[in-house]
Image 1 (cartoon, rainbow, N blue to C red):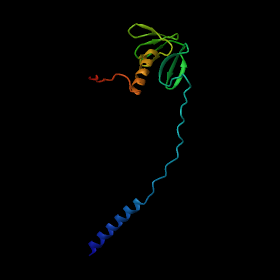
Image 2: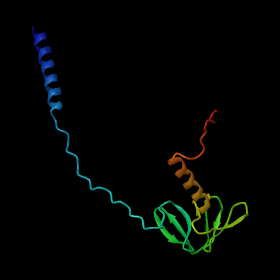
Image 3: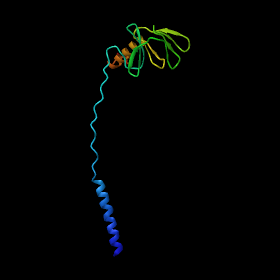
Image 4: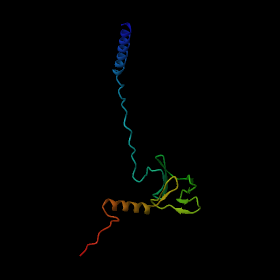
Length: 138
């Protein structure tokens, strides 16, 4: 009898302990202000890299754009001069023209390449591009 009573008392205290823990409330969530949106001025890119724009060489790093005033060397050994002359790691040189962009890793994208990509995207969007058509049989 004594053993049964102590077992029931222990079981009752354990259930009461679990029930008491289940009733605790979770702390309310703290209000957080929304992040400000970054407004990009017309013509300035937020993508990191070097771009020729308006006859100036602009460098964007971590969202900050500034004019290139002194020669800069990229991670792959490419050197960019303030006048837009690019000397690649293999020794060849290229002159940046209006709209050309070079990533900080040294990949050059010309304005002609961008125009071609845009035209291909528009053709795909409008249903054009390379499609196979069956010849009509008479």
